[in-house]
Picture 1 (cartoon, helix red, strand yellow):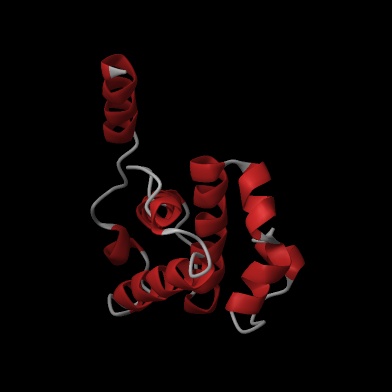
Picture 2 (cartoon, rainbow, N blue to C red):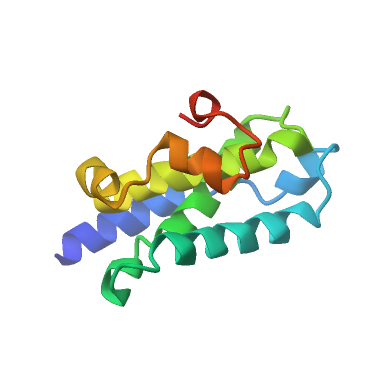
Length: 131
């Protein structure tokens, strides 16, 4: 158990995103990131509204935190993201984080698939774009 926690923390440190992500993306304003973060938190509460609180905060691998880490890692390696695609990248990162935290079977049981992701973006993107 201690070894697993150490390995997780070590891997997390290895894959920290670069700190200058907002400066790399000239088309993205700094104000977009807090808005996206708040939207992901609202999405998380909306999704887990019908489920018990323990499941919402399942572990240290909280999907909201993981999705933000994935988002910043992706943005630190991909310099050509425009403001109209930032929500798409965010919801895709959240979907990946849910699959990692709960597994694909549990995520499917909760009904969180590409169509539902597209719905939560007010159909700004299609299910194909999200998956």
